[in-house]
Amino acid sequence: MGKNPVRPPRALPPVPSQDDIPLSRPKKKKPRTKNTPASASLEGLAQTAGRRPSEGSEPSTKELKEHPEAPVQRRQKKTRLPLELEISSTQNKASSSSLLRNENGIDAEPAEEAVIQKPRRKTKKTQPAELQYANELGVEDEDIITDEQTTLEQQSVFTAPTGISQPVGKVFVEKSRRFQAADRSELIKTTENIDVSMDMKPSWTTRDVALTVHRAFRMIGLFSHGFLAGCAVWNIVVIYVLAGDQLSNLSNLLQQYKTLAYPFQSLLYLLLALSTISAFDRIDFAKMSVAIRNFLALDPTTLASFLYFTALILSLSQQMTSDRIHLYTPSSVNGSLWEAGIEEQILQPWIVVNLVVALLVGLSWLFLSYRPGMDLSEELMFSSEVEEYPDKDKEIKASS
Amino acid sequence: MLQTSNYSLVLSLQFLLLSYDLFVNSFSELLRKAPVIQLVLFIIQDIAVLFNIIIIFLMFFNTFVFQAGLVNLLFHKFKGTIILTAVYFALSISLHVWVMNLRWKNSNSFIWTDGLQTLFVFQRLESRKTKLCFRQALQTESRQLQKKVTATIYRHKPLTYLPTDVWTSESCGL
Image 1: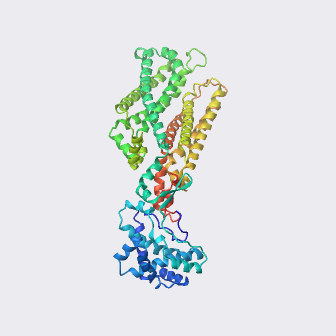
Image 2: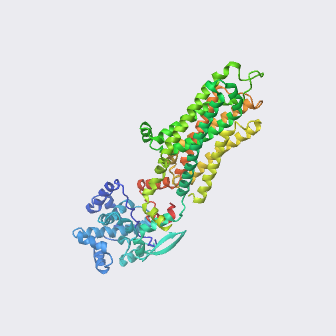
Image 3: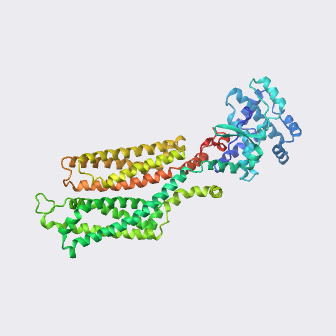
């Protein structure tokens, strides 16, 4: 952000979780009591830097009068006059120890952090939570070292180059791998809007793609539900017509149906697979307890998916019989799979299973067509984001 | 991150592979005039399943979550898909080997035994579940999870190594 490299590291962004606060409280007391080892070591370090802590109070009070553009500091002084000396001394210590860190690595870091975070936390607490993000773009008054004399003094002691940091009206925002200057005041006003527009940039997001595919598949599923129900009913009608009264003409059924059996079995499997997936798509599997409760409450969607699953199992279990029908030869032929009296014994359960499958499929089609638009998994998968960005969706609608 | 065009490409590729899988599962029994046809179909099907696994792992590697090192979270979420796909792959191969073994000499013979039928049913059922999970995985794969996990990182790690500016710039890639 174009700031002086000497400045103390910026404090953490405000974290909403609670566990942060109890950690920071004991730290706050440390610099005041000055009895803890951390502050003692800090003091020692500060003294080695060639500065007495008692001196520190004077330039900072002067500086306050000289630089009226530090309103936050001033407010702190007004509110806590008795603590004035201590705070200003700790602030100077912070700057000196950060200078020291340049030379010595990160010796004084933990104590220093405690010292620096203290004044900032206090300013933050007085402000409402919404302003916190905007504040991050603002100038941190502690970051700006306005005390020219002390820095010059220390430059003579330490060779590390230290410039004088001053607030610039520009903020450098990274856009497309390049930093561009933007006006600070405008940025503060429109921080949230900018965040939203950055998110919006790819107007056709992966989420939209997923949503489109999901809806397209729901259309295919809806088609396959109806087609499957029609096919199954037609199949069972054909079987009963070919079998004749009371299944009296089973050999006729076998001869006519044997070319049809296997293709129909395959088609049934394909459609059942599609329908089962599509039906299960409509339940939100993430909440299993809700799904089970819906099933017990005879919710049509849940019931339909269960019926489809049962039908799929039943239909698959008839694969062997279908193959047997497919390979039908009259029992007079040598090596036939069909012996004379066995036909009814095999065909009876096959017909019953086909009938049951047709019933199940028809029923679930009815259930699903009762509310064809209902899709719980879509709500589950995509609704959380919609809640997250209600403004974004509105803006998209408005722009289109 | 997955760009939109890449995502569409990957998604359509996945759907192509899955629909081929469904097609072979449905109609391979009809195309058994010559055993070689069935053999080729089966081999391509197994390769397709393998490709699906590879693609879904590639998609994992491309997520922000994975690059942040939270592999555990990803695998926990997509545990079902991964396990089911692996089981389906194993079942498919065993069924294919068995069927080809029995049918190689005489493609029109009646080969069904109870064990084979059970395997057949389980393989087909497994394929159903696998497809269901794949579809769900693919569609959850999008930004939703990444958002959630970024929030998690943000909450649990004190971010001492990142200046706050990173989160306001575009470089965090969300």
